[in-house]
Length: 459
Image (cartoon, rainbow, N blue to C red):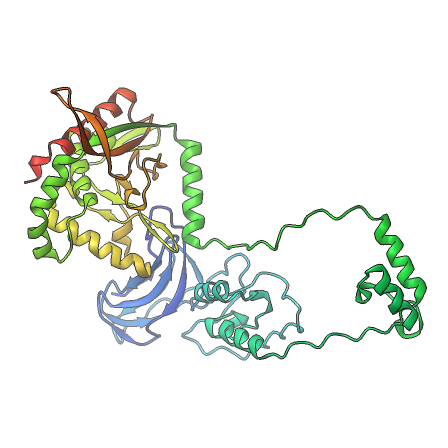
């Protein structure tokens, strides 16, 4: 029986996916788990794997590199070699997109859109691959000036690179000769006027004496020019940054959020870290991080306070049976939150290995759907960047997020009234008031503080 190939929901807020490129073609034999295409989600570039083994058939017309496919939309089948599959209707183009032929059917020749005139910008939406857009920003290329060689005139990265090389090779334009009478030139020098800015009224637009005088009078009558800001650079948000901004705006607008901050002595936590470092490094090849320890401590605390491990949905508080802790990871392309599933049940070695894998994936922004979905609580640690404390915004639909600042040696009053320098970190818990009130949140944060200062349960 034929198995449908459809656009999966690869993150909680994904509505459509953009096909970056097919890695197989109509009629190819595929194996279950084989990557068949790369898809740009609302967060990252993800691999779409075949859900069965068989022959790829019936690719829907219009489903090609660059196509925008709604979540849940079927666009191909995996079937037995002699099995017939249904013919799907052509994919409707997304807003601003043109109809495009399917890769499984040889397209009829299309008229190639004419290249824009020298220096002229193309009107209407610019159709370009994500790679081409990123390269254009790096090279400072205006995409509206580039002629695309892809289907339907879509701009590819090689088009951007060729355009940039052509611009470099282009000889500088010679300055246009200014036609003016000798008297006009002399007057312009005396008045400090750039004669190339003057419009001539003589034969062949030749500049005359009265033209210079009129220009000088116009300048004197004009208001003094205001200081002009230097040309600003405009940066286009990528899909990750755009969606992150939208979700954070939605979070602060729809959830009544409040924050509690506490200072915590991490003397014993750092002592425990050093004691476990050799074993963890030997087993994982990675140093045991403070983030790993805090993640395990938070996971244990969430089991004691399930309302912090919750989400507010349909006017009800949903308590999650699993403790899935997300860790905010910043990249050049934006912020992502990969999730450690069942964090309360995993060892320090397992958490260290998963965090290492996430860091490697973040360098290429190549996460799977499983990596980024299902979070019930988030930790955001900016201490390594020298941040003392900060308020993080809740990652919807979760109900809480823990912000971690840097460790600072601070004078502390000891039980015997002496003063000692102790390593102190600042923890700020942001809570959705609908899930937890102030007293409940304070107790939860106090539980985290106590476990950090007495972390021996981790041994």
